[in-house]
Each structure stands twice: as structure tokens, then as C-alpha cells.
Image 1: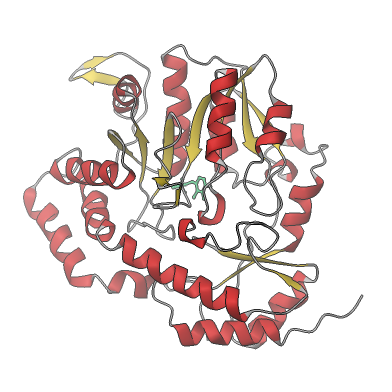
Image 2: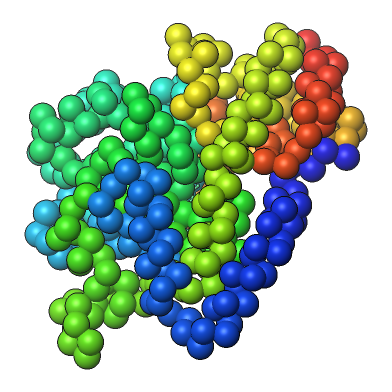
Length: 375
Ligand SMILES: *Cc1c(COP(=O)(O)O)cnc(C)c1O
């Protein structure tokens, strides 16, 4: 069987190093806001090429707290509009509504699944204050165009980089483009902890200061509380784990790219659409970190069954778009045809830093032997 993602194998590569790192935390007697967090924050800021990295409890908090910090700094207020891709994972939208801001859902570019600058421009109103480009599946959004729009209309940009650790465009990495960027270190992400963890990267000193306070009960100085904050901190054990795994992230990314190349070169079934295949950028995979390798098929269910019979495990990212979720009845009446088509057709093939090229060939053969019903 070719598993979708064998996380146990991913982490057992570093078993000894992880156990040593965790043991040092156990023996240190210091478990929150200590040396491991400081070291990891510095290393990850350096990796992204930014000044600050602020560790938080998870990726959703990274996004939510950044918008909250902008409210505290007076840059954005309740009721302001935030542009976000309609096909994102729901967390990007939860961060907006949690802050009583208004999400403005915009259809993605169907070739890249990321925000299309022209559609963003068309959605800008006098209430628009921010854009959240989501680097979906591991590929950077059209950041040069989005940043110039933001400049033109004086908008804040919060990258959702939860799926794009190390992805780059024009030599600049995810986390290095916007006013701030939220990362998730959920175990299945490209850089994954052994539990929940997240971080914000930014070059803005004031923002970093407010974020540090907000995640620590709103306290900027011991026993003094400037804000009604929350408890959202990266802990020492997860920071120690992430410190170990960050050293291997580029190697993991290189392996993901190799698997992606096997898929891109090998899959030639006309019933399947490969990532980027409708774009001029088909060969620009250097920038993509392949968090997910997502293909499209009009007969997705049949394809998934065929692959399962061939021993290939697949998942769907994502089956139901946010605007059709029960959590958002106010959006249920909206129609986003591109987004809805994507959600009906996408299927994610196995992708991991430990899968073998032979298993990738098994996946290729299984994809190529799929026959549509012809309906
Ligand atoms: C995973 C993810 C998040 C949320 O991260 P958590 O650490 O699970 O809270 C946000 N946005 C996107 C696009 C994600 O994939």
C-alpha cells in the first residue's frame, strides 16, 4: 500500500535527535518561554529572511492574533473588510470572523488555486483594509502583483503560509512578502511539530511586540497587562522538536520536489489535470514546496476508488468550501463556481518526504490505468 502520508516514518528518521532534544527540555526544568523557543524563533526568522518570528500555539492563532494586533494598533477596526480566497482552508476565514472583521471571499485563479490579483482588485471597496493571500498546497500566491495592489490601495497583507514553509518566488520566501505571515507547524505540515504549534513572521517591530503581549495574556511586562490577551504560546518541547526538524526542511522539500517531478512527468491520463498544467509556469516547480500534490478529475469518486483498489491512498483537500459550511449560514447562498468546481474535482495524491520513487511510480501507473465511464 502507498500511504498518503506516513508521519511516523517522517519523524522516526530523527528519532534519536528528537529524543535527545526533548530530554534536554525535560531535564532543564523550564517548559514555557525558554531558550528552545528563543532559538527556534531566531532560526525560523533567519530561514524566512525576516526580522521577527513570534511563536504561538497553532496556525489559526498566528492568523487570528495578527489581525487582533492590527486592531490594537489602530490599523483596522471591527467591520472592516478582509479579502481572502474562497477556496482556502476554513482557518483563514475563522481568523477574520473571530476578530469581527468581514471576510470578502474571492474566487481563485483556477490554474494555481491562489488569489488572482485582478479579481482582488475588483473586490476592493472603501472598507477593504487587508488581504490574506493563502499559499495553497505549497505554492506562493502572485505576491508581486498583490503587494503592488496593497500599496496602491493602502492595504495590509497577511500571508497564510501554513502550507508553504520555504516556498519562494523571485528568490523571496513565504513569510517574507506581506506585513506579516502566519505559519502552522501542525504535524502534517511541511515543518511539523509533535503536536500543535504555530508562528508569525514579520519585519514590523511594533507588530511583533503587540503579538508577544497578546499571546501572553496581553502582558507586555511581568504582572502588567496592556491588552485583554489570550494564552497562545509555543512551548519548549515543540520548539525543541521544530529546531531539530528545521535543519532537515530543505532536504525534505527537495525530496517532495522529486516525487512531484515523477508525477508530472509520468502521469499522462487525459482525464486528469495536473497542478500548474494550464499555466505558463509549468516548469517553475522550483518555487513550489508541494505540501500537497493535487490533481483534478471530473469523476473524482471513481478515480479515488480505482486508486484505492490499486493500493494508493488519497485524500480530498477540501470536499466542502467554507461558504457552504454550516458554520457560515450567511455565506451559504453565495455561488462561487470556480471554487465549487475545485471542491468537486480535486484529489490529493500521496506526498511525503519519505515516500520512495518506486511508490511514486506505483501511483503514476495507477493514475494512468484509470478509465473514465465516458459519461
Ligand atoms: C493548517 C492550516 C491552518 C491552520 O493551522 P493550525 O496549526 O492547524 O491551526 C491555516 N491555514 C491553512 C491554509 C492551513 O492549511
